[in-house]
Image (cartoon, rainbow, N blue to C red; front, side, top):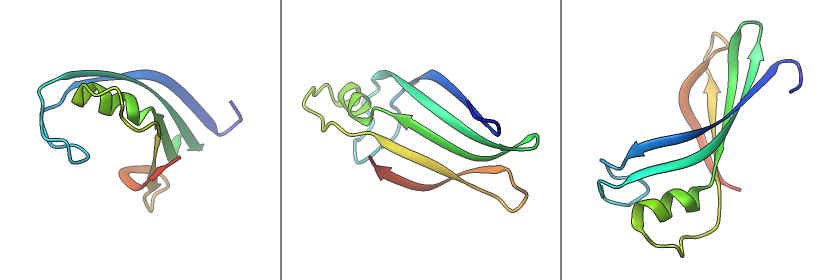
Length: 94
């Protein structure tokens, strides 16, 4: 990674207990790989980008393998102090 950046790869694991993207709760378990890239400023996180295969998540929630093939990029907005606030600023299809 470049200086001022850090990255991880991990699996998101959970149970669908609330409405998500218009899909009512199913109680299904999900496991979806994701990558996160952190922008660092000193010892603080100043930005965050998360990438994951949305079609895999939708497939696991609905049981439908014909989910659209796209990914979601979620970016957090740094707060006034230069740290990531955790607020999702945008959610765009890529």
